[in-house]
Amino acid sequence: MVSSYLLDLSNKARKYLEGLENKHFKQVTLKMLSLQRDPFPNDSEKLTGSNYRRADIGEYRIIYDVKDDVVQILAIGPRNDAAVYKRF
Image (cartoon, rainbow, N blue to C red):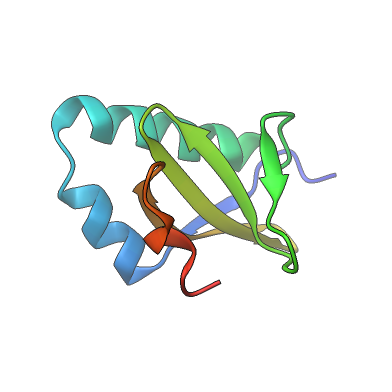
């Protein structure tokens, strides 16, 4: 197992992250950094019918994929809104 993965944000995820308030920006960023160290934590789940995974942090959900040594953040969105799943 690789000790530290590269972190890659999609343009959509980056734009969403940049629009968050400071408190939420910090929460989501810390969660992404923890995924960089361990992309398969106990509190993440594989999406049904997909190889993508989801991780929740506060009011937000992170959709991501792990390939080789890269954690690709595909989308970030509110937990109570199913729109974050529409592409996946």
